[in-house]
Structure formats: C-alpha cells, structure tokens
Image (cartoon, one colour):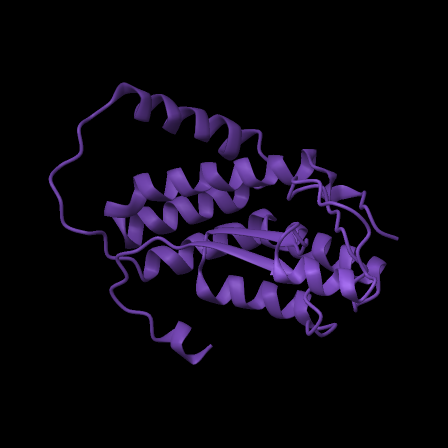
Length: 199
C-alpha cells in the first residue's frame, strides 16, 4: 500500500480484473479487496468469482478432490461458481456482492476518479479532433448523472473539483463518470444481485 501513496506522473489508465474464491482467500478478502481498489485509484475495476474452466490445472485438481459441481456458465456477472469453495459458499457470494455494491457505489467510484486524476499525467500528443458526439455525451451525462442520477452530488463534486484543480482532465472526468454509470447498471441488472450455481 505504501507504493500506492507514492504514485507520481502516471501516464497509464489501469483496467483491473480481480477474482475472489481462491482456496487461500481469508474471510477478510472482501474488505481487503475493496480497500486496495479504493486506495489504488483503479477506476475501471472488475471483480468476478473464481470458476474452473475445463482443461485447466485448477479444473483437474478440483476434479481429483471431488469438488467440481459442473461446467462454468461463462457469465462472469451471474454470481455462480462451479466448485465447492473452501470459504462458506454463502459467505463467499455475500462477500462478492459486498465488493460490487461498494466499488460501484457513487461515493466509492467518484473517489477513485479523484485519486486517479490527482496522479495522472496524460501522454503528450496532438490536439484531439473536435466531435459533436462529445458535446452530446457531455450534456447527456449532465442530465443522466448530474440531474436525475442518484449519485448526482458526487458527480458535481468530482466534476467541479476536477475543473478547479485539473481543468485539462475535465473531459476525462466526464468519460470516467459515464463508465461508472455503465458499471452500476450492469451490476443492478445482473445475477450478482442474487443467484449462484452452488449452495
């Protein structure tokens, strides 16, 4: 975590994929993962439950141990697993839902945007070509996120903070805010809200 606090002049946007459900995951893994994602400022963070695809070493090991329950569904948002985990299944699924509800909540998501923008230095390149669709997307974000959205307080807080502190990042802030809306909708409409293959 100390390295996270020393981030300077980042010119990369990290897309982070995280998995829970490993045999060595302790009960604290859910809180630990939320804390890491928040402190690292990884805006585009995706979390899934571990599954064992056929043909992998994990699949073969679980098969030998008699812990396989079938084939994976292939849908990483349906909160299903195809094996018996070491952690209690219900604890694992509830912990997974806790991670998603935390990192995709407006307060947590916009906090990560701020952490990221405070440490981000975009690569030097030529001026971007103006496109009308950018203006349209901006005004749509104002309506959807800043007026009718349940996270509108955090949207305006983060947007105004960015405009004052990092005006060159305003467009990026809007883009990342739209990402957050997308992730939240996926979570709300997915099986992560309630079903699983084991248990």
